[in-house]
Length: 88
Length: 155
Picture 1 (cartoon, chains in turn green, red):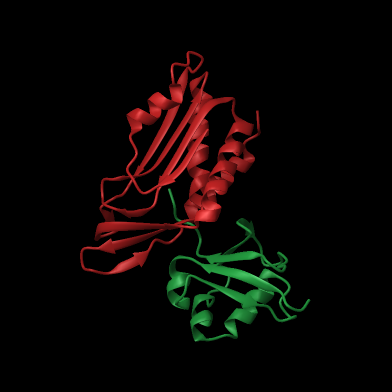
Picture 2: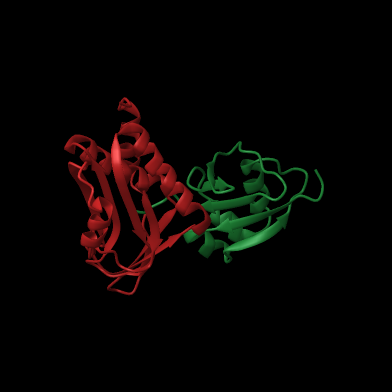
């Protein structure tokens, strides 16, 4: 489980609240899923807590495919967080 | 299948001609064009910015088109979505669906725009006349419009 690095992307108001559009993160052993990743990110600072504050609003994709809270995270994954989509 | 994400405006006439391309088996083409409105409630919109997730957008749009192709006997399909800065009155999205008969063409067109609104990673930000900016909130009735297709049996 050690030495896992993922690439995280943030879009729309999540990007604005967190203050960056992407980052590479080395994961602690406690992070195994989208849900535990969000919990860990919120421990990283107020900007993350503000972005993830409203439960059930933030959407996620793992390797460009829509994911759910229990989707597993593995070394090398691209994980994106964003608000509900508003295209069209 | 034509699926494109672009900053430039699209030309409906040119896309229609490209879709038909001299074919004589197409009996009907459904068309939806989404435009930027100049109002949101009682506020005046002066500009809209569309952000997207480039690595995911193209495969997500192609998956939506494949889903439509599995449900209706389509002879061609065009899906173009713009990103970047857009002004009121400009086109945001173009959907064309061609089939031998009108029902498949029209139903597939509605399905494509309903699914695009809930499954494609685009986000709109509006800038208002008073200088304020706001991200557009997702609408519950968009989710409902996409969901009702799950009750429609595949042909």
